[in-house]
Length: 591
Image (cartoon, rainbow, N blue to C red; front, top):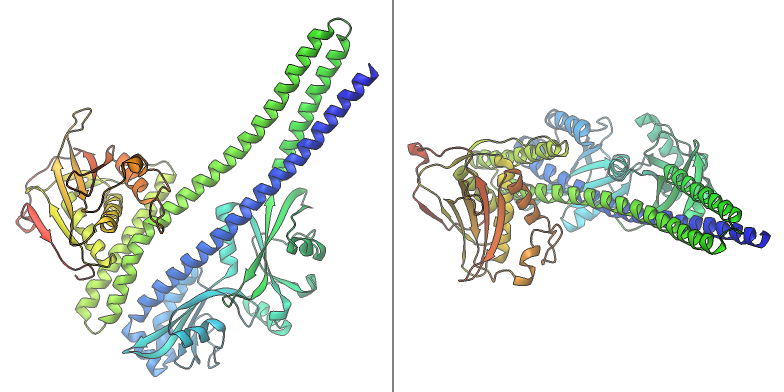
């Protein structure tokens, strides 16, 4: 029996070692995936915030009062005009820096520190914007040791640069959003070679912050997502992380898994590192409990086998083998289940972020184009007010869409009310013209009487906008996009309803991929996201409707959104009367 007991002990030991090795591999792979997600999300966050800052600065450049004050270098007027705006950007959008510089990069006003002015801004972003005449953005160290996402834009009037606007967001706010999105803590370390100790100390006193210059020999901590920096992260640990290894440390009674990403500034120069820290205490406890449970069960089974060894050796051997296989299957299923759950969480998060980014990008492109038109036509107040009204409408749509998304996330009903579908289509086509570049005709065919349904107009505009973009991308030559609305019962139940169709004159969709067009992330375009049509399908389902697609015999593709009859149609007023078929053949980009 002793040899048998030793064999059993060796099997359990080998199982524990293999399980521990496997757990380490899975844990390291999970952290690697999380670090890659952090790197991707950091790039996306920087690009998104830079786009938002650029849109804000372009809107600001349309302000004639600010332009005149800059040309006169009237600091008091600039302070009056921009003070409240900067306070709003700082409190609601985490903007920490706003500079107004003259054409020679001499600072006229720092909104975040009005008492400091008159110095020449010689940072890379500023000089690069001056040399190229284009907006420049990226991470950059400030003179006080702050790592900031900066955007510098030249302000040109009649082909002449009258100054530069600079907006910045400190890295601390960026890593906070990484923490909120991915559930990992981050620490930003900067090489001391790029910071003067005296200026860094002055920056701490000016910004009323705490910091320890002597904590590491060649690095200094400039941002973090935790209240305290873990003391277990020593210089030796950072050295190993910098060499590409991962580390597990104990802090506050918890196990933390560490990895590191290099940080590059806007000039491509390595300036420090981003340390990613993930709490794995729960995973380790679950793993050890599972291993101990399996070992306990195995020991119990072994004792039973030893007790019955002389009685029924053959039967015990078969039962033990079956039990041993079952335990391995349970362990493998448990590991696969945890991995699948984790992948599903990441997939759901990526789908949500991608869908929101896709839906917000469409109106924001229109906002940028309208802002550019407003800047070019600033001398025409009426035209400028008209463009600003369109910008405001797009902003309100974005706000309403975000509200709808938040409510959808809380499993609440979306807001629907009686809406004239013709008005929704006309507003969407107007935004489409301001967004898409090219000359594409849009033909609209509506009933003579107004069609009023209980719908969410914001979501319906987004769905229709996606279909128009797809049609514009597919249309070739002088073909027109056709939008029509007609009564049509449900094909299965016969329930009354209306169908909104969008036709293009392209090559159509290949039959083998026709069933995949509504799958999330499926796209045939190199620059596509694969989220537009799934969003259309989701909006239709929210309205108890459906969306269909078919290739037309005469060429092109037709998408149709069927909506149930939730509100009776009625006569329309004289000012709403329109012919049954309205041809619209204006150049895209014209009003």
